[in-house]
Image (cartoon, rainbow, N blue to C red):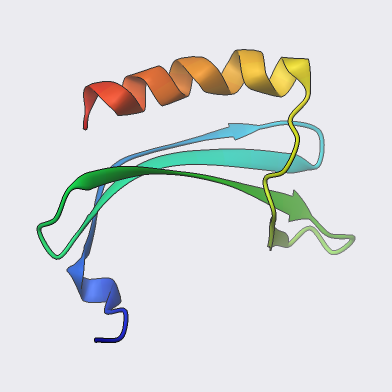
Length: 77
């Protein structure tokens, strides 16, 4: 069965912005299934548009700002 966006329910979402990048923490439930956390990164290109990027490594500052958001997300799971 292919992915159907209409079955993906967003339960929680918060974005933390940094210098030219942002990290999004979200909790989703697909088709009434188990709630799962998703963490992603987007980088801003020269024209100001946000583009998906692999999260990969995080700076200490990013971790210190994102971990509390992740804990809020866990409370919603």
